[in-house]
Length: 248
Ligand code: IPE
Ligand code: IPE
Ligand code: MG
Image 1: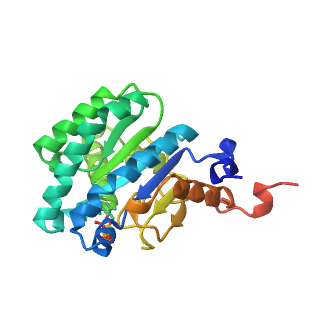
Image 2: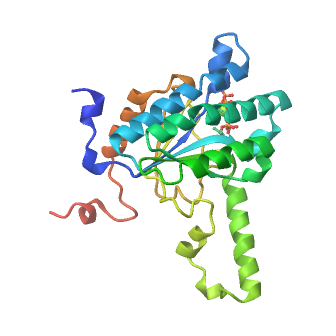
């Protein structure tokens, strides 16, 4: 049986999030510049989005650029921003053909005018597409997002439009950039690093984590299937005991 056939289509995660890591090392292994790795990180994005669409996954969130990534050498930051604009521009037709809806989370205004405009254009054009929602995390960090939410709640509380006693975790979630997206059931990180690097800290409270040594440019559909199968073999207890989840 192929890996794809081993997936139980009735127990798919609704939302998969991926920390796409390892582009620089992939390039270095080939004696190339880091940007060569980023350029080769575009194909796996397309493959994974296609695989998710074929399976019927509802949301795919990709960590493409973190708040901390702004501190990389300026030439790498510029190259990444150019690659972002170029790729979005080149892939709008693919998004439309596959009815993929593009969304973005993060401090988008900080991306710079051209990237922001290209991104907004693609988001607007694809807004009514009904297959996969592809969420790009750009200039994103979870602590930034949580602090922004806290600030906005504080403003509303001072204005008197909400009471401190109204604040609970459901309301807090509504102030995050992911307000329209359910929490991911599965988080994948490539490149062998076992850390979360400021990604979706609030949202992954009960997410299943899958770490693989594969570097992002080498990641493909089969790797995604492997992660989904692994996820489907786990027991998600949410603090309960096994017998409560599987009563006799
Ligand atoms: C992930 O690959 C892409 C981004 C963070 C933009 P890296 O650029 O982090 O590659 P490594 O981790 O240095 O190999
Ligand atoms: C996390 O990767 C950010 C993205 C994948 C966009 P990094 O390569 O920036 O993370 P660290 O520095 O290894 O934690
Ligand atoms: Mg990295």
